[in-house]
Length: 232
Ligand SMILES: *[C@@H]1O[C@H](CO)[C@@H](O)[C@H](O)[C@H]1NC(C)=O
Ligand SMILES: [Cu+2]
Image (cartoon, rainbow, N blue to C red):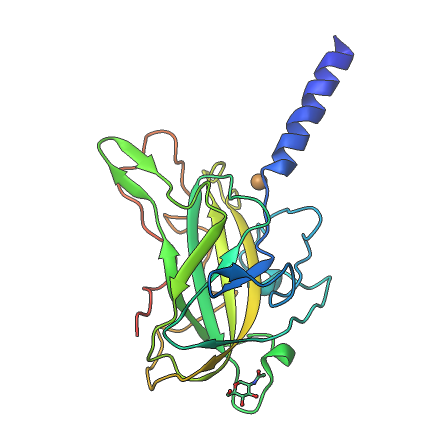
């Protein structure tokens, strides 16, 4: 009996770990560019565990332990890029992608993304209605989105964030799965991306879309965390 419950507890621990995920690949031209090639290797590259504290420095690129840099991929403004997860996203939740332009004369490989410099370029929210809420990002492994053609040329960090909400009814219950890629945008325009936010800083952790019980009562609306998407 004791052994059986220990086995069960261990099995549920394993399934909990297996349910986690990372985003190790940038997608360019519809193809993954290899794990941790254009994406900075994150601290959780083996554990797949999430970030919980939205105020920590690791909330930006989650690489304080690896201190990793990546190779910078060259992509055209107006083209479609994306991220590929190591295994399909396996928690109900929502996705955001933020970008930040490295200051003039600074190689993005040597830049940490500090300051009020991030804008949102893509999101996948929840769908509500008919007494139900659904999570279109759940079960997907690849997330692709267009770069606006008016995006200025230059080097950028691109940060993906999946917010898992399966146990988010209390403060710091939401789980953030994060990584940052490096891109060099060519053929860009003269757009003015915004609104700009700092990361960390963009969230308190108490937003209605972050501290939320998704099961009961079933939410009738959902407020996507963060600023509006900049569409160029
Ligand atoms: C970015 O692209 C420009 C234009 O092709 C090129 O001159 C520059 O060397 C590239 N920089 C990096 C870091 O890839
Ligand atoms: Cu998990």
